[in-house]
Length: 286
Image 1 (cartoon, rainbow, N blue to C red):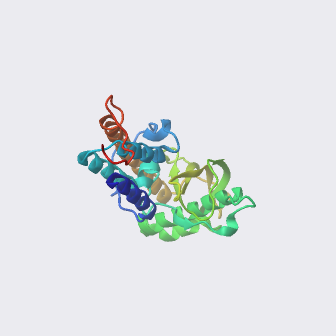
Image 2 (image 1 turned 180 degrees about the vertical axis):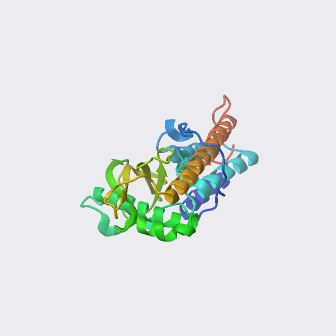
Image 3 (image 1 turned 90 degrees about the vertical axis):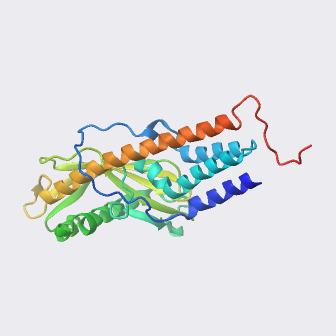
C-alpha cells in the first residue's frame, strides 16, 4: 500500500508542478558547427510515461524501503523537471526568459467536431510562441536593444518574415489541457546568415509529451530598403549565445536522461527482473 500511495502522489505532483526550477546562467564556451543527436532521439515519444509504468511495476514486486526511496526520488525528479528532461534534452531552452508560451490553456472553441484541437491551431500556437520568444529575448536577454526586438515583428525596420512552416502532428490534444511552446535554432548563425530555420515543439502539459513538432523557415528582411538582408549585429549576437546555450542544455539534460534510465534499470533488476521475484498482489501473507 505504501508503494502504491507513493506512485499515486508522484503522478499527481507531475501534473501540479509549475514554474521554472532550473534557471540556466549564460556560460560562454566554444561551440561546434555540428550537433550530436539528443539522448532521447532513439526513445519512444512516450518514454516518460513508460518510465512511470516501469517504476510502478517495480513497486508491485515488494520493493524494500531503500528501493521505495529510490523510486520516489526518480518520480520526484520527473515531476519537477519533466519539461527539461523531454524538451531540454533536445536543446530547447525552457527557462522563463527564453521560452515562448508556458502552460497556455487550451480553449474549448479551438476543438473540431471530434473534440480534437483543430490542426490549424498548432500553426497559430507556433506563431504566437515565436513572437513571444523574440520579445522575451529583447526584454530579458538583450534589453539594450529592446526597441529593435520589439520591431522585429512589425513592418518598420529589420524584421523576421515566415517563409514556410511544416507541421508534424504527433497526437491530438483535447480540452481540457494546457500547452507550452518552445523554439530552438537548427544551426549556428554566422555573420552572413540571412535566414534561420527554427525547430518548434508544442508540449501537452496533460500528457507530458509533444503534441506537434514544426519547422519554421524565417527570412531576415529590411522593410526600409525592401530586401532580404543578413542578421543585424544585435540579432546575431543573441542568436549565437542562444545556440551555445542550446548545445549546453542538450548535453546536460541528455546526460540526466541517461542516468535516470540507468537508475530505473537498476531498480528493475533489484525487484521484478530476477529469478526469485514474487509479485505483491496485496493479499495477506500466509
